[in-house]
Image (tube, rainbow, N blue to C red; front, side, top):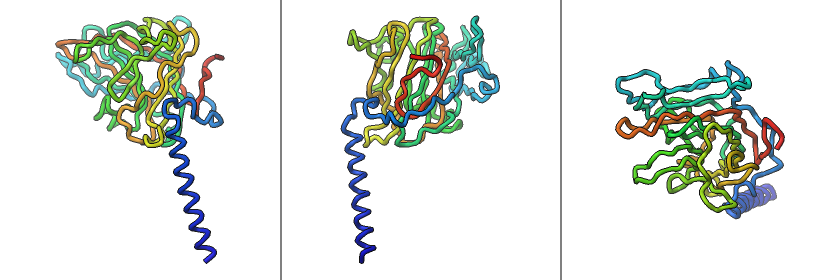
Length: 294
């Protein structure tokens, strides 16, 4: 009898704990950063900084929507390049100039640590627009390579977009950094002006932190906040709260994924490139700069 009573009490306490956790998750839904477990901040883990050629060889490149005519195998440009100062970076283009019809130029790399369901991680990435016009998106995926190739854009969960292309409804993107929302994409916002951020400046490096909450949706997860420094933002600035995962699958996030697109041959978007460098991840809310003090 005593053992049965103890078991019942344990089950009741467990149920109360789960209810309290769910309520706590929903209580501050508007701001991931405010409820992230700051005590869980870990050291930055390197995803890739492109200084190691062997690490770069682990990237997979797939052209899943190759409609080039005349047909060109493997048209995407995904190269490790060296700057004048000796720094290495990744340049990503859907195809060389003049080549049209590569609709899904995918490049992806496994994360050094899976982001489990229920965990919050901060991702850091530096980007640099080679030139406009272009159409790029990057972020994290819960899928393995063959499924990434099948799904293309829908393999992404948290994602960031860089483009100045005209949408099918006639609206024109201006080249500002964009996030995914339940209604499509939205430009990040300058909190001082309360207006959309300015277009990303060409040939300028931007530091980007995105705080990814992979908790279940019922607990307020499947969202991410974005911080940026560079261009109009001379200091680290929070520019979006509560962006949405693309599909909200509630699965571990295991790959860093980039995608770009020349657009259709009839109405091309442009082949401007996007440079990537210094991709890192850290558990919890971690807004330091992994490559220099901030």
